[in-house]
Amino acid sequence: MRTYSSLLVAAFFALLLIGCGGSQPLPQTDTGDVPEWYSNVPGDPNYLYAVNTSTSKDMQLAVDKALQAARTEVGRQVEVKINALQKRFQEETGIGDDAQLLDQFTAASKTVVSTSLSGSKEKQKKIVKDGNNWRAYVLIEYPLGAAQEALREQIKKNEQLYTRFRASQTYKELDDEVQKYEDYKKGQSGTPTPQ
Amino acid sequence: MKSTFLFLILLGTQKICAQDYPRWFLFPRDVRCVNTVTMITQPPTYYRDSAISQGFRFGCDLLARYTMMQISGGQTFWATEAGVHSMGAKYEQTYDTALTEFYQSTLKVLDSYIDKQKTLVLIGDSNCIVHDDVRKRIRLDGIKQPSWVEELPGDNHYFYAVGFSEEFYYEISSWQIAEKNAYMSLARSLQVKMQSMQKRDAVEAQDIRNEEMNVTLTNIEILERWKDRKKKAFYILARMKK
Image 1: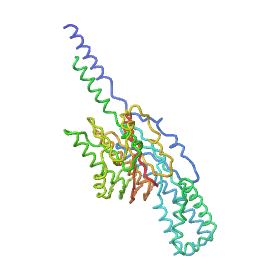
Image 2: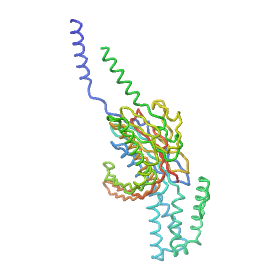
Image 3: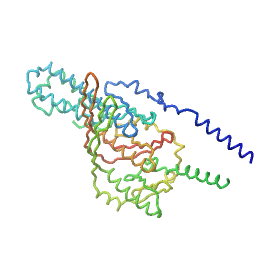
Image 4: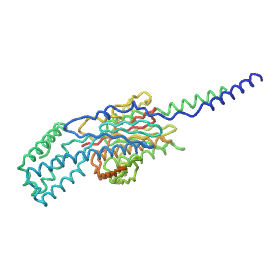
């Protein structure tokens, strides 16, 4: 009986001490979880890369946000490349004086930028706990040749544009880059690429 | 005291056993037959055979989707200084339900596994031989994190995607959501239209991002499954031929 009473008193004081222990520390983010590829984005002249990180209480939403933002960034990079090509075409062929042709080329460029994300790859992905949320780190890889190939096809579809551009140095370089990309694809798949 | 101790041991044993899976569920690619699918459904409430039959019907429907499925729709996010907010998502899946009936009449249950939390069914052609080592039970604890969880395979013959899910109360929900996320990710790899509008002024910046897709997926294969017990996350690797 005495032992039982002593145990009860000890348990009571133990509970009291736990209650007085103060508030729990805030949950910490494990900053060591930042992946290497996020801090040092890979560089390859044949690919465009974009990274992003997002958080959400829902794991899939965190990843969706990050992936969409990374793909949007890839789209912007493609737009920058296409705009640079457009300027070179303008300078070389003088289509800046021909408003109708310029509009057609601008339309071709915009079509390429908005639909050319075909074959974008979620190269790397990491999900970690960030306090009560999930944090997703993603790396998207997009073959530059695919955008160039799409632009070339858009130009070929327009007879006026094609006639004006095909003799230009810029078009020859674009054609060479696309040919390299097609040879690369042929090498990867082991089957001849249709002409 | 003794009965409490025995009860705790029994509870612990059940918990441990619930982490056993047949190899064909965690590594479907080891089955090496065409037209096979693994299905996870709820555990039997009373009759064991009913659960397996239900799993067979659902599995045939799933195989019909994986044979050919059109996915269309999109989602929008609005990024502000306060964070990124979902503005909504709407997707539609279209597939040929006649294929479901065809598979129900031509395929059969090759193996099954039932425990307190789930019913697993392996469905395939009657000519498919499932070897004993593929039917073996394996523990998730013994499997280290596969490399594909963080980095996709570099094979250029296929589109690869990883789908994942956090842990829900019902384990089958976690696996099913992870599988759905895997083929949605495949769809995005195939083709996605991105649109973005950025607005910046002296005080804040906003970005509205919209993605749309309208793609047809064919012959989707589920290759591997893995569960991270520490993070309580479920991962599935899927692929589709280019």
